[in-house]
Image (cartoon, rainbow, N blue to C red; front, side):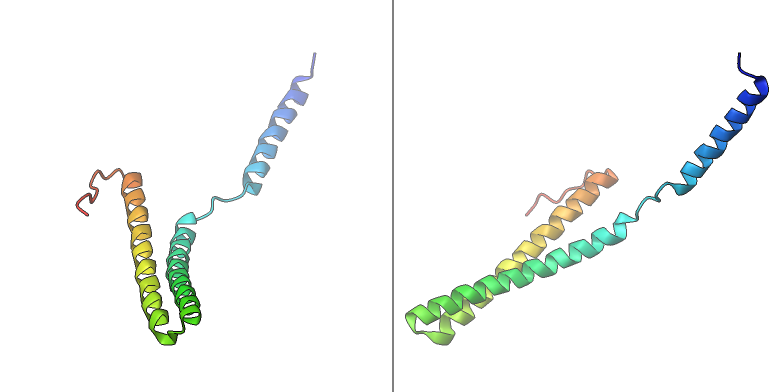
Length: 111
């Protein structure tokens, strides 16, 4: 039979151990701040990627066909438009996800 004093000391030790573990537990991260920054970088990268792809296609076709500034300008503008369209689509996805998380049933389906 264990000693009652020993059981009491063991219970106190377990309480102190649990308190120490709780104090050492990692704090939850504030992901909201980082998710907004990630969203901003995602949109910037989508726009720059659209411009770069359009520029590359236009430059390549101009080099092959010998019409140097024409297709470069046209495809750069098309790449810019595609980048903006992709940015808007990403913003709409994030907005819908946020509304779903907030419990809002209002969705914009009239596109």
